[in-house]
Length: 502
Image 1 (cartoon, helix red, strand yellow):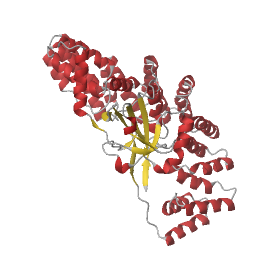
Image 2: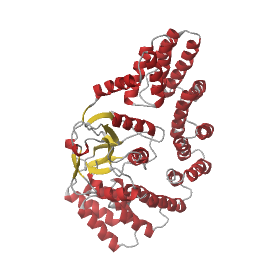
Image 3: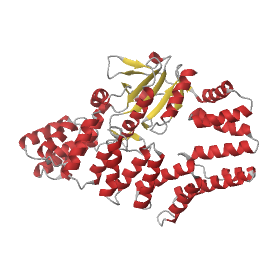
C-alpha cells in the first residue's frame, strides 16, 4: 500500500523539506488472525492498542472494516473511543473518509482538542482554510494549556491577518516559555516577515529566551539569523557563530563550525582585499567550506566575483555569476553581470545571449503528458499548452509544503494572462482524489489540477512533493528543482518573464 509521508502538519510550517513518496507494505494477516484481533477490540472498546492492531492488520481502507466500525458505532452510540479509533486510522493515511468520524467524535466530546486538531488538517486538505482556523480555535478552547494548539492557531493567521498573526505568535513563547512551540513561533514569525527590524528583533528574542543547543527550532532560528547577518553585517555573523560554538551542546556542531569558517573567510577576505592583497583574499575565500544549500552559496560566490574583478580577472567574475543567474535569476546578480559585462564590452543583448547559451545547454524537451483533468471532462496535455510558459508542480492535498507554497505561486502567476502562462498541478496521491475538486473550489487557487500517471512521467521526475518545473513555449524544461516562498517570489517572476521574452 502506498504511503505518503508528509513532513509537515500544515502548509506554512516547513523548513524547506519535501513531502516524500514511498512504499509501506501492510502485513499479510490471515482471516483467523484478523478475527482474533477483532475480538480483542470487542472485548474492550477503550483499548486503543487493540483498535490499532486490528485496523492495521485488516486495512483502514477495507470496506469490511468500515462496515464493522459503523456497526459498532450504531450499537454503542455514546462511545467516543470507537469512532475516534477509526477516524485516527483514516486521518493518519490522509484519507477523506476520516471527516465524518472526526465530526462524530467532537459531537460526542466537544472538549476533544486532538480531534479538533485533526479536523483542522483535514479542512486544509479540503481547501477550507477558514473552517480549519475555526477548528483550531475550538482546540485551544478545549485545552488552553496545550502549546501545540496555541501555536498552530496563531500560525493559521499568517495569510489571513498579518497583524493578528504577529501578536498571537509573540504570545506563544510568553505563555509557554522554554517549549519547542514557543521557539517555533519565533522562528516562523521572523522567517515570514519582510521587515528587517521585525526579523532581527524576533531573532534576538529567540537568542535570549531559548538555548539553541537544546531546542531545535531555536537552532534553526539562529541559522537563519546567521544567514541574514552574513549578507548584511558579516562581522556580526562571525560573532554569532563564535557564540554558538561556545554553547556546550554545539561545540562540535559541524553546521556551526562551517558557519564560523565561512564568516571568517568573508571577513578576512574583505580585509585582505582592502589592503590590495587580492590573491591572498581569493585564497582565503577559496578555502571556505563548500556549502550544499542556503544563502551562503551565493554570498561566497559574490565575494569571489568581487575579488576576481578587483584583481583584474573580470571574465572569471562574470562567468561565475552567469552560471548562477542562468539557474536562479535575481536582480542583484544581473546588476553585477551588467557591471562586469560592460567592462568586457558586452551590452544587454550580449549578456542575455550568454545566459540563454548556458540555459540551452542544460535544457531538454519535457516528456509529453496527457492527464485526466479533475475539473472538466477530458485531458490536459502538454501539447495543448504549446506557445505558453508552463509551470508544473507535483502535489497532493495532504502535502503541507505544497499548501505552503501555493500562496507564493499565486502571487506571481496572477500577474500573467492565461494566454501567457499555464499553471498545472499534478496530484500524485490517487487515494486523495476526493479532496481535489473541493480543494480547488474552496481554496481559490488557480492551477489546473490533473491526475498523475507515474509510469509516464519520463524526465518530469517527481521524487516527492512539491517538485516544480518551468517549461518554455516550445516544450523544453528550462528550470527545475526550485522552491518559491515569500522571499524569492521575484526570482520566479524573472524566470517566467525571461521565458516569455525568449
